Image 1 (cartoon, helix red, strand yellow):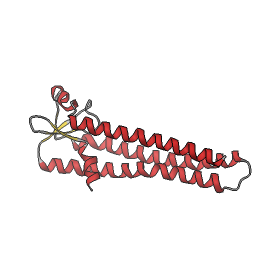
Image 2 (cartoon, helix red, strand yellow):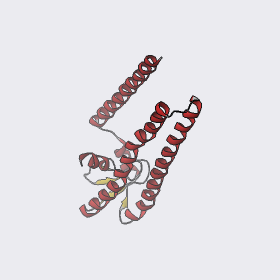
Image 3 (cartoon, helix red, strand yellow):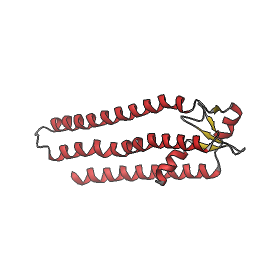
Image 4 (cartoon, helix red, strand yellow):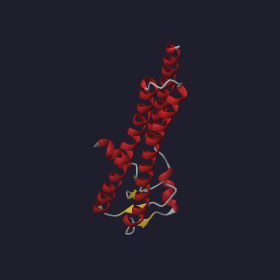
Amino acid sequence: MSLVNRLADVHFRKVPSGQLVFIPFTRTGKCYFVDSNADEEKIRAFVKMYRIPNTVISLLLCPIVMVPALVLEDYGGLTPRAHRLTIALGISGYFWLTFVALSLMLWLVYRAAVPGLTASLSEVGPEIKVQLNALSAEQRGSRRAALICLVASLILLGLALVALTAYRR
């Protein structure tokens, strides 16, 4: 549950005056002051309802798209390689389009529900948005560490692919 709470915490920020701000989309868009704990809990529950399925869809997208293609490519049994590749890409494309459609549908529901959820909240002024955009040193460090991990994992993945393709020949 801590991952879900961290995903929901991305949408909230405290300004130096101590007020909690809800950021539904981006910090450059509309942001709202959260006045009471009841409003905060209601908004957090709503954001979690959006972020949990969105995260699950994102995590399942890669394996569900890649596994059928790899299995069919290796064990398909069709003689021309082009036929195996076409069928593998077709199956993967179908799953990819399905999950993209689910993500888009989820996003449209979230976007349509936000105005009703924030109707009773007051909007943040431009001077407060400047304070929201300032990142702390801890946030910059965590972003830098995440970026380094991403680049390192992509390099390792590339090296693994090169090693596997060199081994097959």
